[in-house]
Image (cartoon, rainbow, N blue to C red; front, side, top):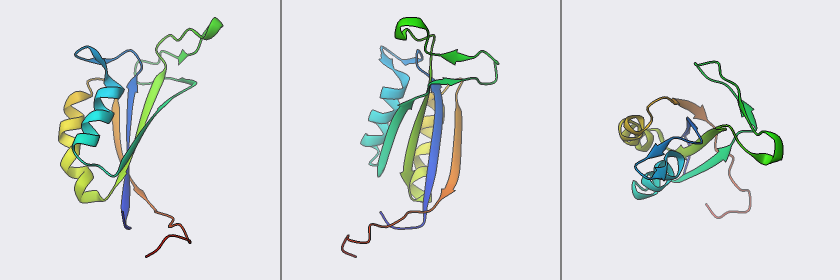
Length: 110
């Protein structure tokens, strides 16, 4: 992957599903099939969205539907190609496309 790059952030709830699969997992698997450069799903410790309900980890580690953020990095052309499909999978989440700067590894060959 070479600069310039974009960062796609996808916010979903932990309990949302795509068929029988957790939505975040279905999105990551689909992004891999679409040959996106990279994606990571991370669980939030606490958050709220448009419904103003606070989601967080409760006593004994039981969740009440934590927020999940999927971070995707690739060039703009590739991400704009996959956004319509991913947007179709996300019913109540948030999808954001941001400018990003790729910091190259100084020891990596050009």
